[in-house]
Length: 86
Image (cartoon, rainbow, N blue to C red; front, top):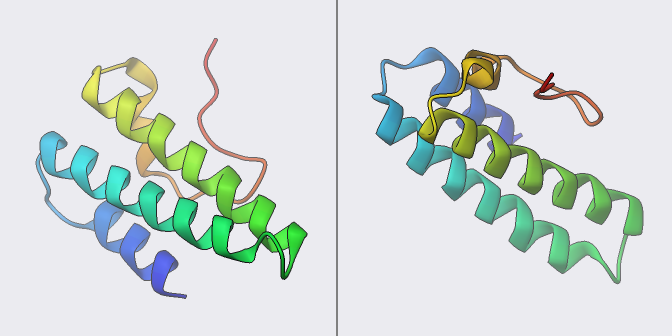
């Protein structure tokens, strides 16, 4: 739930692109730590958290590099969704 609230705040606030990049990298790091901690307990949950970590890092990079797909980074996603590069 905490992660969903943080993502909502990133998407709905008037953060500058630099602040969004920083927030997304922080979120990616939290997902990474949580995913690592779940590996021995629940592999499925661990994989979902690790996937979200990579997704958040890619979103941050898209914003940082000012890619046209960066606007999609503000759209909520579920596992398996996310940015699509052509």
